[in-house]
Image (cartoon, rainbow, N blue to C red; front, side, top):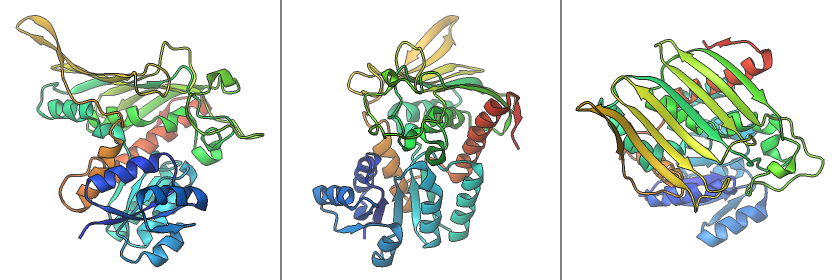
Length: 361
């Protein structure tokens, strides 16, 4: 029998969750959303029988549902995940894992107590380029990764003004927490070493300027709140001696939107990158995956050819969740890693606020 899944939240990312779950052979049997009209439209086009206005109502009726997908504003990731885990369901949650590390600790403890799988949509790990590079790293080709640079920078990519993305109480922050994918991917390549110290600065230039709004995102909210950062620069050290430079922005004077992890190893360097033709538009994007080596006394750039994935791994990440539950695959991410990531996010905001380095414990 196929795994039965319910989706909480019928927003844009729900499409990818649905596609990934069904690709892996699962059956999406219900959707819950406070906006019943939106939930109804989503289920109607896909032939999903169940429509509910809350997770509680969905769980009460869908007794044989084994897993829950969380596609809500960031503020609700933790409470919805805890509710699903306490009801004995596996959980696949959108990024970021939570608003902060304290919430993530609660989620980790709840998953352990329930004995259920908890995974997050760190979709960039599932990109073909990322998996190809990880295989080279695992083979020892790069040696020890000493340093890396993680960036997701946009020139004009603020996702709406006054909505939940720009309201810290609902989102947890701006591009630091929204675009944490490359921080996670760099840590993934580095085998998630234990952090030591972090120094960060954030900037809010252009957050009130609608010329810097992205070509996608949620509609502006009249009289809404815009109290998050526009850009961040940070430097993180690890107890292993490794280090990571971080740069995230929604609105910053850069040439174009660029998403990348570049690393320097003891045997080789590497780069996984996506350059967008225009902020938020994928159709003209350029993907690259390269190793930088010295062979036979020559400096060599080795291009790694992979399929192009316009979903940026989103479908693959959701499919991996189902395949993990059914024992067909190893999980692409674990909640213990998500906790380290949220500690890094907390440290970025803490250091930027205090103007001092933060020691991570």
